[in-house]
Length: 409
Image 1 (spheres, one colour):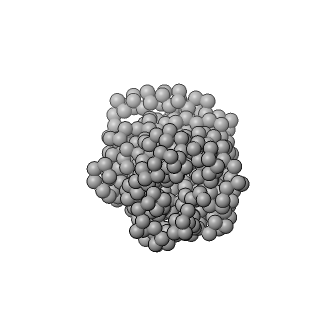
Image 2 (cartoon, rainbow, N blue to C red):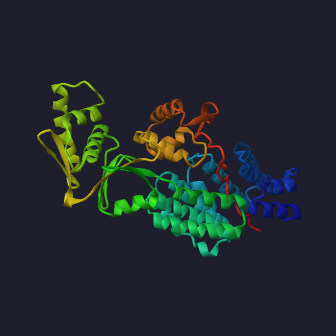
Image 3 (tube, rainbow, N blue to C red):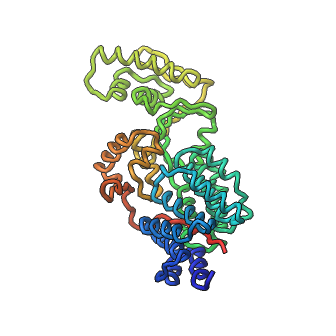
């Protein structure tokens, strides 16, 4: 490796893409193309970065297995940053195996980190856990350790395990500080700030108050019957009934929970569940039918009984009842999930959002159009290049670009 290539590699490892470009910007040999591609990715020009890395892979030729594998790993990271989640795992796994066989353990671990991050975005938390189990973080450089612990924290947050998430973020903060990469330190701090931001509001007889992730975890562990308006489900520590696809039943159980421990009159239930102010005997008959369906759905967690004036929710075992709603206001489950994914600061395509949500692209597009009309999301680009983001908040830094791929010597 000549002096300029080595200097550019060190600059990229330190998170300084401009210094790397100063060394190799005018060179077109294979190593220079690869380093230029990684530098452009860190600067945010993902399309140019992908073109450079593909050119580098061709220039290396079939005999240079390790450099070609590094280009594949770098291109996989660009696909992840661009939220191109439909890319197959086979090429990344083949590149990882090549790097592992040739002793490039740092980049092999980075390939596993990319696979785990993709699985995390897709909601495959158990798969992400198994992928991370194949990595020994103590043997990695500080930057890779920070990335590892950020993924662990992300999995814990998705599982609402606040204690595990805080411990992982503490380790990530120390590792990022030791690595000395400013962008990595910024990402860790951003993740830690999310732990201090309310994730939901609890509604009760004495008003409502915001809850941190730690408080949500404690509430769920307390054994209380929780009507979760964030995920549209009825939850208890050891059980969960999903009602996201049954909006009438969820509206009914939420109204009953908000009225607990008193009963709720039939007129209020009809207005909240059927969204009408004018009702007759047909609505009352429909209410009886829906209440029968609700009893069957929540059996084992609670009972619903008729009273003289309405209906009463009774949690099993004399438990408390709590109602959680999104911190930013009520949204339907599809819109809430979209806002949660867009909160990472990256630009998402509607196809990628449909993939992670397990629904059709047309359904996602309708929800995005509704959010855009309300000013809650923004779009840029046209056609297949169209991406959706949250509106920028003045005074906040942008999200981290791609973490540097540490070059092998």
